[in-house]
Length: 366
Image (tube, rainbow, N blue to C red; front, side, top):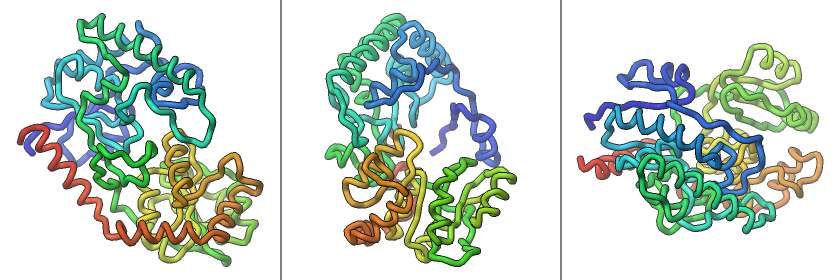
């Protein structure tokens, strides 16, 4: 489209390696906030509070650094995955902004913001009180920079255009009538052919960039007589060797999920959004092991739709084997996964990329 691309990232070295063949300018984040001691965030407003948005002085300084960078770059538009600081700065400087991502960081246009649906009872009044604290803090920071205040916290997200790169079934806020779902984006290369080196019914699990599995998971699956293949890109050699000694086949790179799902019924994942979408597209029921809030909210959404399972508070021990039992004992999971596959199996990530490109062109009036 002829525009210069500038990326701001918290992991500059990794991003530079990823874009080493592209003419992309890369900056470290201009500022970060000091997170509060970790507490369970029950809504997007509480997530912001936990990240430090309840401290107006800190938010003002943080916003000032973002404003300086954006004012220096003078971009035609600011694209935000999950940077509320960049979004607030764009709002204050009247720069067009675009939210792009799976929808988790794009809360519905409601006040107060809805609580995450993670299978827990929520005190809505308490959640609303935290939202009011965050809103007051942000408005104080905006005032310090001479900007108009927000009437609602949701107004900052309403300011931006939205590009939601998922399917409605995977939107953790539920299917939204005002959202044009663009389908899931994800890597399509660097794929190894799956191999299971041990006897037994096949099971597979994917872990994100160097993350290690729960050893109890490994013990349950291998003791249950399953042949376990784990894909863990970036896993340390010593950790890989330890898993191999436990009778696990381990790849330190991505494995072709289409082949995995063709050969294996039991597909585990920690809940990476693109991976979860692919498991469903290939007709298998994702058995999710969520490690953060977005993964948990997505897992709970899929379990409510009988499209996936995860170990919630009702899951009895041994919980990982009982996820397998849940699929074996109720055919509705595989029926629903097959329906999803019938609709989206041939979905090409390049279609999503093309839709994003077209939307960006419209937004920038190209």
